Amino acid sequence: MKAARRPEVRLPPLEPYRGGPLEPDGDYDGVEFREADFVGQDGRGARFMDCALTGCALDETRLHHARVLDSVLTGLRGVGTDLAESTFRDVEVKDARLGGVQMHGSVLERVLIRGGKIDYLNLRTARLKDVVFEGCVLVEPDFGGARLERVEFVDCDLKGADLSGVTLVDVDLRGAASLEIARGVDRLRGAVISSSQLLDLAPVLAAEMGIRVEG
Image (cartoon, rainbow, N blue to C red; front, side):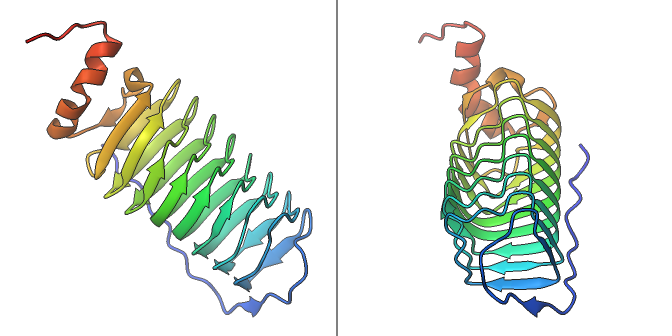
């Protein structure tokens, strides 16, 4: 089992964001966004490099195909944020409170998601490599058709996960505080779980294999 490589983000001195709406294909380099309201705005294709986003509102914000590189995102909140086909590389996401985030087809590499709660995260057909979910709550995340390589779940509550069609390589689930798989339990090949997790998953595994347990 190969451990995930965590991001090492060292931000340079940042320039405060001067306000105004996000711009499609905008280029933001070395900018600090603090308590910015991006509700309903269109920043598709934007690039954020060496940036800090703190306490920003992202309800229905359109960031399709955005690129977030060498950045720290803290306390983001929002529902229905569109980050489909986006790229996150060397990024720390801390204490996010998000729901219905669309990240299908996205690429995440060397990403740490620590704390917070994300409901209904859509990562279908996404590619995750060297990603760590730590101390967070994921409610009904959808990993359908995604590829996860060197991904770790540490003190993380994974509730109602959909693993349909997923490909797992060196995925460590042993540290998950809770592990609930709604679909795709047959796709756990390439993952490692603890003996206690195996016992918890036994009824689901038996049902998947058509085994009837009595007595």
